[in-house]
Length: 174
Image (cartoon, rainbow, N blue to C red; front, top):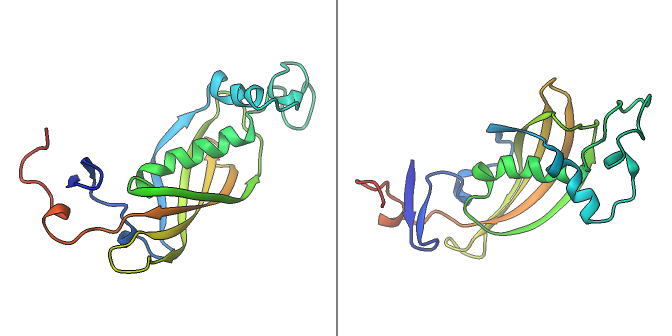
């Protein structure tokens, strides 16, 4: 389902507007993603993270974290937030911040991550048309159902505009 909205000049999903969220609402996001070599260790090198567990193949041999390199934590957080974005931030005006990041279990290259979200709070804008702030708690788990990450994310979301711009189109938009 899509709807047209002149504020974005194109086609948008029919859900995920500020008005669609309420505290306590939970979502399991449709997509999952397997972490590859480049996305798993590349960011650690780009930010000059000196923890060898991210880029030294032999550093963790025999450790309790496993024998393989660890995925950089912020790459895991970004992946979880990215998997959640279609449902939670498609109508975002701005990403306001991340907080309460917790890395709960190791992630290795080849692990597949799926994302979940819960609405923590909803704060309306100054009037009925102004964007509002939604705080989400996101978490990700691996293919073995172990939760590896959780964190909160604040997003400024557009409100659904009443009238023709929020109606479903009668013909496909080209």
